[in-house]
Length: 398
Image (cartoon, rainbow, N blue to C red; front, side, top):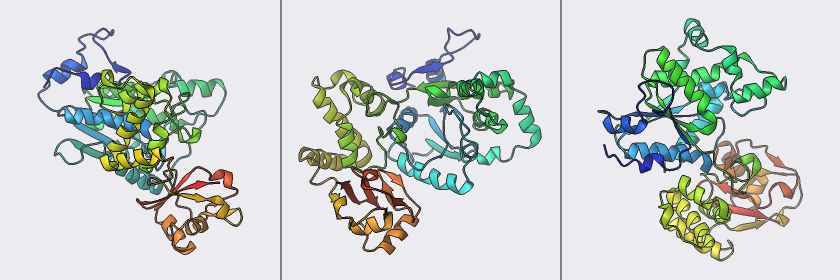
């Protein structure tokens, strides 16, 4: 193993435990990497609670790839069981429990979107596991054993629970199971390292405690920053409209990223690219354009990145995303199936309905599967990109 761990330290917030911590005989993650006689098992779990991933979600995937490239095994856990509980982290109220069908469909779209990031092809470098394989087999005795490893006080120390308890918002007992179930994943796969956002430290620490309980060597926790959105203010989120989806058209990605605030550029380069930070252009505008080009190249290839760049130079009116004026829609409310026909993306409203039901229609990268989807007024659609399949797009303009 090489002892240059620059790939490990790039863009991380924290590694725990550290040799300086109170526990005795702690080795560092760097020492474990340098002295191990086998590939380490590096865990990252995703709960497919939605259909799409944005660039913020790509950060742990990129770190997983760095571990793969260093010779270790990425263990990607699809939380098809835990997603049906719902992670309470950062939530002010109970999350809706998903159906098995919801989770299965979302999981497939997640895997499709991370394929450009992870090494799916080299033998021994990736395991994709579903935690229902072991969690659905737990009987009441085992669940009781897991529950007995934590106190109610420890659970209420978790930030989200503490806030809700203080505000007298309901906390349901099944939500206490989530950190234990996620922690048990580490036991089931014998994880050496677990990746997560800075908001996941509690859950990762639970995994360490459970590994100890079951006689395993506790995993290291590697925490990654939460990406600030393209507004430069709040964390990247679809609900805030400051996101860049992995499934978006290359031209749309480019347009959004070339406008990232100057103050955020270095962080975006560090977390979303492998480019040397000390060799970036001095001019902020040149940095913006390089960032946009490099991210599009990663997901769509160099040709697509060059086309998006040229289209942006011409104001976005040529090449990347053709435009459709909503003035051409005779009246609102309008059904999505009608809109697909009116824009020319589908030959008829009937074809539009079929494409929606088949999961082939997206609005700003978000899949729409309800054929009765209706929009009340043009304001809901202006500036958004409507997509059918992989290659047919229009931007909806006034």
